[in-house]
Image (cartoon, rainbow, N blue to C red; front, side, top):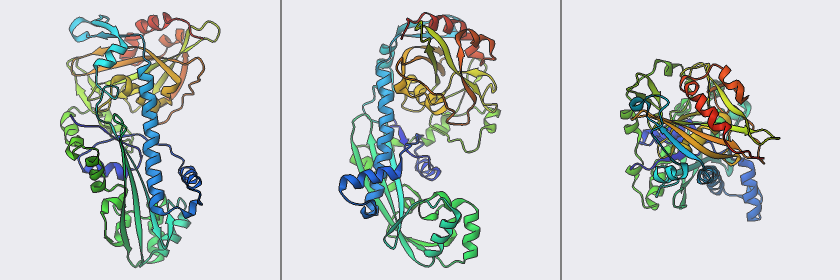
Length: 441
């Protein structure tokens, strides 16, 4: 069984390095406030932030990023463990739409399934951070063209050290290992005009040290000495392999990129309309189903139907719906936030991840109260029923480009909207199920 990997970074370079090494990770941005993390570490150490060695700084930030994602996953697990209600399964291709194949408690279904709740190893969370040290000073991302130009001219014909911190956490066991890689970067001789043209591309503005080894900046770097070049790009693959082995695992246990390519055979013409910057997550791909349609999600798909209760009666009064982006399947319709289930996730875990990514539904703000599975055999969609906690407030926010809008819709007004086909077909049953939930105040 392949052990899933979660990359706690939105860096395209780190993602690309892992894919090239045979690992397609799930990407979860950590959201770490880096200056604050360093300031807190310096205060605990009783020194100024400037006194922290650069190699310590990258280790602190890598640890903070991996730890932040671990906390998010812990909230997902806690919400999953509190799950109540029933799992209802329908097999429409065998028994007809509207049929009920089986019922059992959702807690029983979670315990019998796969995912973080039942995993003995993994997922492995990878946190990384890089800083360039030049003449004793740590140089992070310049952000501004002027600062990038100044830095690049300062290092012309000289060398500096690129430090990259790595933190690896096994979510199942709690084991955590860390390492820092280093490499000496020797810059060539170039002109101010060269650098002005390079800075104008925007490439050096959001990278440590104001240069990239894998991009247009490579032409201005003479060589890399005494280290792994992938560490200069942002993640040392050999260093990470060593950490994996420290956890008692084999590097090949993480390989899944080739398997992902082999599993995704169907092609949907609308897929080409998706924004080019969208990250391909493990589990993304089309299933050519016996029902005559292409379905998204190599491991199936899942979403959260979130309900809000009336303050006076405690009964469900509204649901949070997503107006789907035009480029997506059945674009322009209304449904629930959700998407493909990633490798190593249960349907509930996938629904909670996707609903946060698309709609800012935090798992700690909701209670899962049931699910409905439409099982087509090689593919299934799981609608996870959830309620906003009485003492919490979900503030929907479009965290990605998969929505035209998000809206709380009164229960009695849902049927009047242009609904996603399957959601519209199931809505009358969903309505009855939500209306029957006991009051919560």
